[in-house]
Length: 128
Length: 128
DNA sequence: CAGCATCCAGAGTGATACTG
DNA sequence: CAGTATCACTCTGGATGCTG
Image (cartoon, rainbow over all chains, first blue to last red; front, side, top):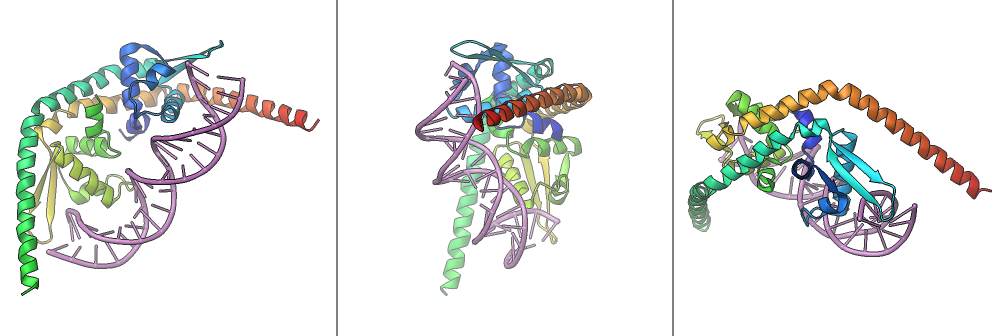
């Protein structure tokens, strides 16, 4: 389990694998566009690591302008259904989000209120 | 997908969820023992976040010494099979690791060798 | 286009001490 | 036992400029 997390637990790895699952083959610039928060540097870094770990393949075309394509290795492909499940789970989470958040926010408000009362009481006691 | 990653992508979250999947109910100190690299501080932090996100339940016993038990919420339980798949995938990875690593290390060695030759050549050229 | 090198602020993390 | 608080430090990751 910890091994798995080492391999795909990188900040962007799962997301990149997910996109590669859907699109099969993607160029560097395409991957760079999937999330503005994912910088060129991070993208390169994460891609290199996954390449080294045998999760993705990097194909370089010797031409100008350069062209590099990324795709999943057989090992990476095996992750596809799992990533799909995770995505589905996220959708389920969204459905129940309203109830959860309502409950959570009520509890949170209660908590704050309680703390306020405790603090105020203590302050009054300190001041005599 | 990105939502899911926000929720369980934390450095230790998946691992904690995985242990809670197997043991149903665990105390703070038990969770603290699963990995020496997981410090008390990190553990508390990650547990709090998952509690807030409705993935786990925190049950406090009003007694001395204190006792706190953690368990999965229904939402968290739904992750169990997915985490199981990830773990299985990790095992498969291990099986094919030898071949992959052999291939990778050979390539790596070749790469290093090539770079060495290039650098040395350039150096010699620079020095006349 | 795809990627590397460098610099650097700030988030993330560890170590330690303290508390109910 | 199960945390909280604080400080110091690491190391990620953002901005920028350069290269084949």
